[in-house]
Amino acid sequence: MRVAVIGGTGLVGRHTVDALRAAGHDPVAVSRRSGVDVTTGKGLDEALDGVEAVVDVANTGLTDRSAAERFFAAETENVLAAEQRAGVGHHVLLSIVGIDDVEGNAHYAGKRIQQAMVSDGAIPWTIVASTQFYDFPAMVAGWTRDGDRSIVPPLLMRPIAVVDVAAVLAEVAVGKPLGRLIEIAGPDTHDLVDMARRTLAAQGDPVRLVASWRDSPLGVEMAGEVLLPGDDARIGSTTFEEWLEGRTG
Ligand SMILES: NC(=O)c1ccc[n+]([C@@H]2O[C@H](COP(=O)([O-])OP(=O)(O)OC[C@H]3O[C@@H](n4cnc5c(N)ncnc54)[C@H](OP(=O)(O)O)[C@@H]3O)[C@@H](O)[C@H]2O)c1
Image 1: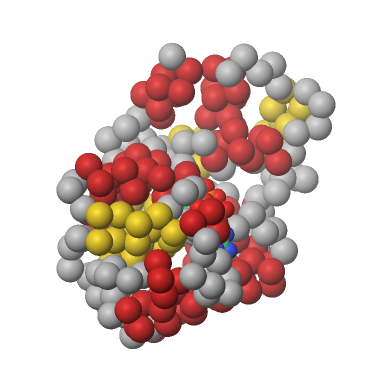
Image 2: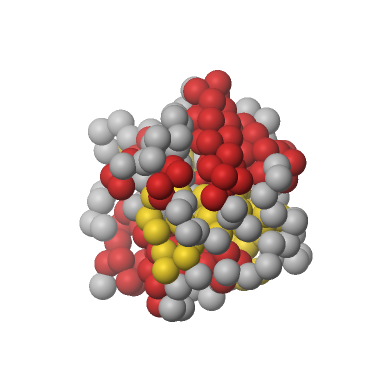
């Protein structure tokens, strides 16, 4: 099956393209690098020619709330409209577990708009909501890095390996649209500070981590069990320890 991966050159996108190809499908990686801008729609009609399913894993680093909302709204509107013109039969969106309970996060606000547009749209759909990826803790430490010190909030989560996310996206994309959201998560619950410390130590980075919500880029509304998946979540098999070994060994 020909499957377009919007954001197919990114972190999840690359692995999704690989998983589709390994399963004998015909993936098309769609991004600005391939001449398509999803915020304007430029090049989308050509990219979706002959495509039966679309996986949307496009991303933006915008941290301003209205800018993030505008990006995801424009992107989703353009992709869904192009899918309708191309006769695409399944739109798969990658979203994030727990975003409905976190009002103050700009990225999550954009993802909520995306989810609403997909579930209210005309293209049959499945939303795959994932927990945080294993590189998320080191990324958060990078955002607040000040010399040899970083502030990382003591956030509880059940993170997952990107390869496991990609495997589910590839499998879901070639199946029947479910018309509902499914959750995916990793095998264990972790604390963000512990994961950041272990990831950076494995990289030989002597950074000092301050476990605090104060001055953290993540709001305290994410504390507790907010970002943990429900009991029905599909569980990826790769552990954090296996991921860490694979990165450093
Ligand atoms: N990080 C996490 O812990 C986590 C957890 C759950 C879900 N997610 C979701 O996972 C998704 C993918 O994240 P990621 O880390 O794989 O992102 P990423 O590595 O930043 O990749 C983003 C992709 O989007 C493409 N893109 C960006 N702007 C574009 C535009 N205007 N037109 C066309 N393509 C564009 C990029 O390619 P070009 O630059 O070439 O255009 C790239 O292929 C996000 O939607 C995020 O919400 C992330």
